[in-house]
Length: 128
Image 1 (cartoon, rainbow, N blue to C red):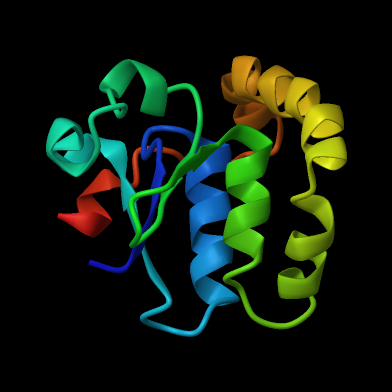
Image 2: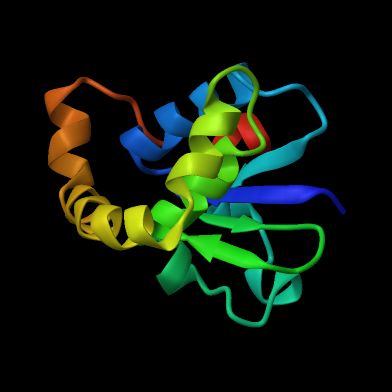
């Protein structure tokens, strides 16, 4: 199993972000899938629909689990171009502590933000 980025396929921001990650990442570095099509409990004991509907999760090949801003920064470390060094810089605990409140605010308001920016959601069928 390769690293797996798990996102909410019914969220416009999440879907847009997952497509952005795929566009800027060499194929086969990791998989990107909406939680709605996964058997979460079989992937990791700490994963649940409730948790993955509130935050993205990166599950590594080694079984490590990252979410919220740490998940974003760990994902960036696997991307191409300048995203990789930026991910290494931002994934230190200081930036994670600073960025988690912003991540949580966006997560709570993602429907309004998605509508405001005209982002489409419900992209689950693409992954089935």
